[in-house]
Length: 184
Image (cartoon, rainbow, N blue to C red; front, side):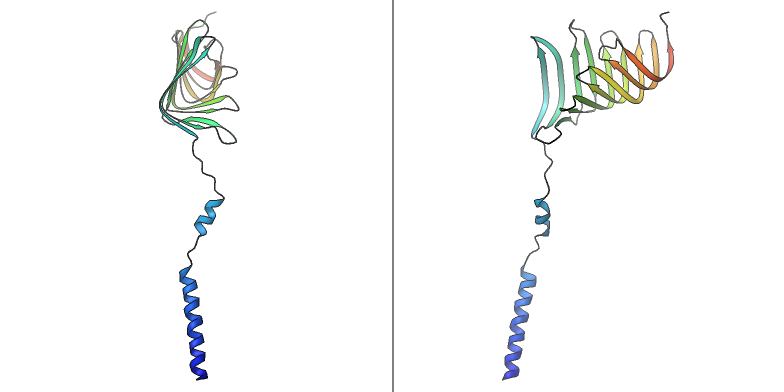
């Protein structure tokens, strides 16, 4: 009888242990998710047509098939994953057109990062093509360290590293080669 009671207790303990072992689900993956912050945009827009005006005059028209706004994070930015087509207007209504396959605008620094077949064309016939270009909105200044092709009425030049004003009035290039007329 003592032996029967001993086996009964062992069986009950074994059944209880097996039930506890197989009955509890592992919530390890859910526990890991507690400390993870989802990186999702606070705004999402399709077929964007944005017009920026100052004193009643249009200064910028931005067109993009897709815009993602990450303004609720510590370093806010706006992403254009499908590219942009921007027309900049100066005070005399002269235009400069900027296109790229991808763009990111960083709100705190005022820098726009343009990537993939970046092309800038001014109303005066000047054009620049490169794979990546930055635009400083505060100083209205473009710059890159990548290879570029610059074309104007004087000729075409290729090089690596260039910075210039948005109207192409001031152009500083680093390593340049090509043929163009000199105005000496």
